[in-house]
Image (cartoon, rainbow, N blue to C red):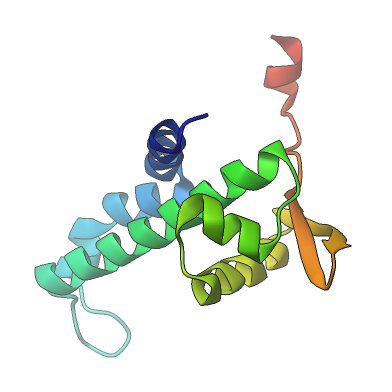
Length: 127
């Protein structure tokens, strides 16, 4: 898969993801109603939060696509995506916490990570 196609595929996954859909669906409530501290989020702040969340999700999906194909180290992920290594480490920590990836070995002293296959729903198994 070319880098361009991989980025497009990651972007589509980002748009289909729960986090972005939730934020989009809650815009009116988040920007018009007060929170527990008596404040509403401004439109500008909401836009910033949405853009930041989308950027994070895009990077995570780019990394996941790489790790679905074969196990990768942080160095290999950096080389294939261009994402800075410290950011990759932060994404790996989050993805491991959510059990979306796991460590499957090492190359030298560098851990290798692989995406955990998604469980298929009963509807997917039927088709």
